[in-house]
Length: 182
Image 1 (cartoon, helix red, strand yellow):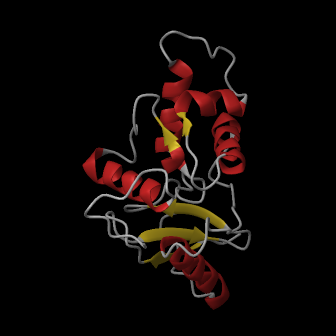
Image 2 (spheres, rainbow, N blue to C red):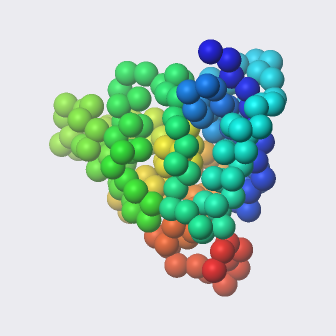
C-alpha cells in the first residue's frame, strides 16, 4: 500500500502539519519535520480527493467549525502496547476533555501495576505520547500531567502548541494574545 504526503497550513505556533496518507487513511502526522516511521522518498500526495478531505477537515477544526478531524486512521506505524494505548486515547478522550498520563495508563489496560510509587506506567505513557505517529488525529495534546500540562514534542514551542490546542478545544481559557477562532 503506497504512502504519500501533503503539508497543510495551520494557525499553530509550530506552523504547518505534514500528513502521510494511504488508501486506508492517515498513517502519520507531524508537527515538525518527518513523521515517526516516515518512509524515505515518499511522494507528494497527488490524489485530489484525499488531499482535499484532509485539508478541508483540518481547516474546519482550526476554524472551530468541527470538534475533530473525522479522518480515517491507518494504524500501520503502531503496534503492541503502544497501539493499544493510542487506540484507548483515540476512542475515549473526546474534544474538550483531558486525561492524565496515569489515567490513560489505567484506561488502556496495558499496565499490570498501576500502583507503582515511581509512576512508571504514567512515564511510559508519556514516552508513548512523544512517539505518537498520529499526532492531532490521536490527540496526545489531551494527555496532561497530574500537576499541569506535561510535555508536548519537546521544548517551549511544543508546550505553546499544546496550550494553543487545549485553548481551541475550550480546556484552557484564552489569553490576551490568543490567535484562534473566537
